[in-house]
Image (cartoon, rainbow, N blue to C red; front, side, top):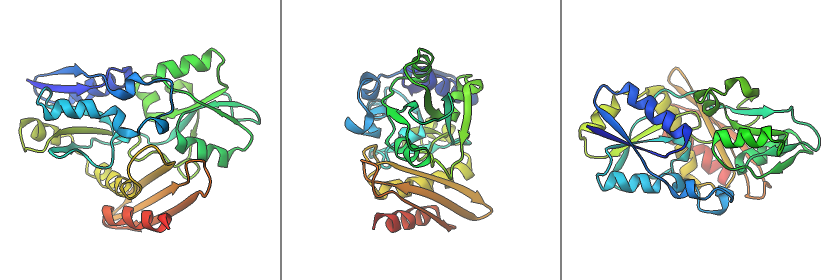
Length: 279
């Protein structure tokens, strides 16, 4: 019996059940509440960053209470705890951000708590009012429908996975709003012991997705790998060549830097672009 660890949100459970359906062994899902699930009224950039959604699950892995964990890859810090490994990155879904609700307009109230989205939103449409929005996907859509916001921004992949694709008003091109590192992808994390769970999980590996996300995570690592800095990166694969597009700014949205890099080694591509923008 392989025990799969997951957060308890509707999206997290969809992801865990999706992976469960692909594994050819007997499994069960163990729900683990994370610090990020308990803090719903404060922007993530103010309370500690990406590890908020993974720490307790990773502790369960290390304690052998679970055998593998399924995460949204964009929630993963750039460095994993000693003894753990990303055993597989399945094929990535659409990485783009999506507008839900009314078209953007002067004075419109746009809901998001993402620094990355806020900074790029200001650049693409000056005059909107950006307001804090937390909660799971269903909660965010409910708040929109109650009139608390005119428009909200969510990951297209999450909307599609939960059956909300019909609510997507517009998909934002990646050259306009660069996605979060790993957005649209799932991460299967196991102990780094070459054990049964690791070997079984690795059967779901998608090489092109791994290469692209490795470049994005190498870029993120140079900046510390958290949520405190507005940062985005998106890599695509063209034959043997990797093309990485990324941006970073100060937390207040000033000093926005964008750049692109190509190459054949994902770590080198990510690090080279990060160091160029870090100056």
